Image 1 (cartoon, rainbow, N blue to C red):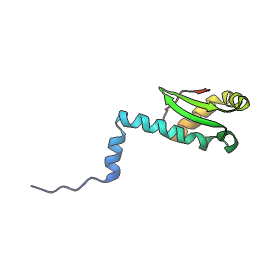
Image 2: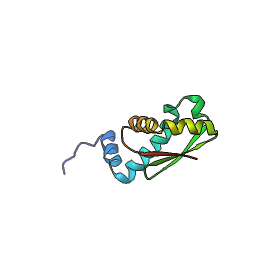
Image 3: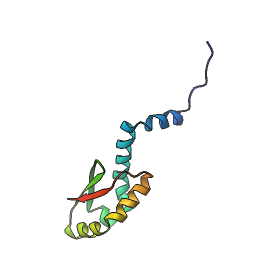
Image 4: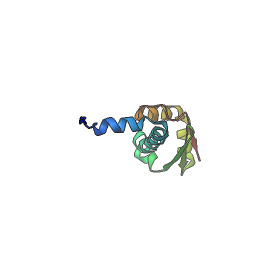
Length: 96
């Protein structure tokens, strides 16, 4: 029996992550983490990204003024978040 070289860990992880059942929740989690990185601290502290369902990010906003400002910048936020995770994960943001 011939010994073969072991696979590198990063190669094995990349193969595992390519599975859609693993990749989709991972990317959704990365979008939730990127929320506070994309927004200024004053806005991020008054919002709470809750979850991603289908391709919609749901965010709790604590003040109506910030909800209005974020609604106006919705398309920019979607673009920035998708660019941050390097995939098109979300297509809409809902503020509650």
